[in-house]
Image (cartoon, rainbow, N blue to C red; front, side, top):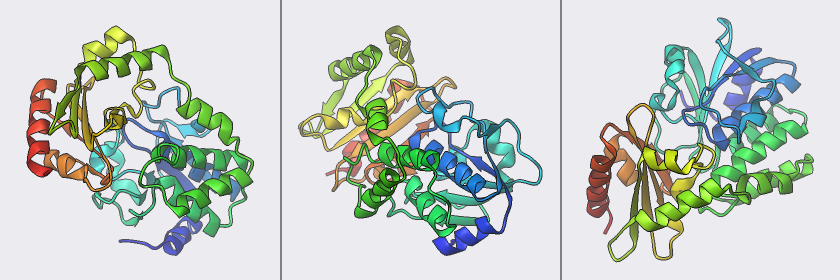
Length: 316
């Protein structure tokens, strides 16, 4: 059942023990949203935890300090943040799928899989929705809560550079500043500091990406061995899919990576006027017009050829 913000806030108000779930390959939005909701519920006197996600990287681990548990209590009310479909859940969570009661999300392309859902595609980040819910619950403006919100808001908007950024986004960010968040420090850590390994993978991408349609489209397939040889970590690869899109003239970029479990991870980025989901949906994925993704059960080079063909078919 689709809920309004007020209805979702009422559901949260009516329960007292919560467990919050995040998605596979967790980013700043799913983790920031989960951490902010967890801390906010605790400030309201409720019991709340975040289920440990084994794929959390050091870049975002600080968000979850003191918040995680390894198992789901039998009496917990389960909530997912920024999870668009069951396939986005870590494999370890799949046994809990039928127990997830509330889904809070902002993906336009999503699948209903919970009893209740609050989905706002117009929100640039899930964290913006969490901010509104905590306001409705009259949660105190704790700095740790708002730091987590800022991480979610800023990372899903590329530090307010992406086209999904709205007036509402800036209002939420302003609330974080009023709450005492050190946005300068977070921006430095999240957006202005690069390891040598990240710079090396960017250089590799420049040398190996394929430009199509008069250099308006880019496809880059990154072998796992290259990542190993360059010594990059998952933190180094965070949002690397947006890098080919920054090349002058490129309107749509597809980045493919080999995963540990043998799949090929596809990430598509597009400028306004182009829809990234047109490619992702072809491979049973989804997301937003500006950013979408999918998992493809093909070897890397075969997947890249398939993606290239689809891109040339769906875009003029």
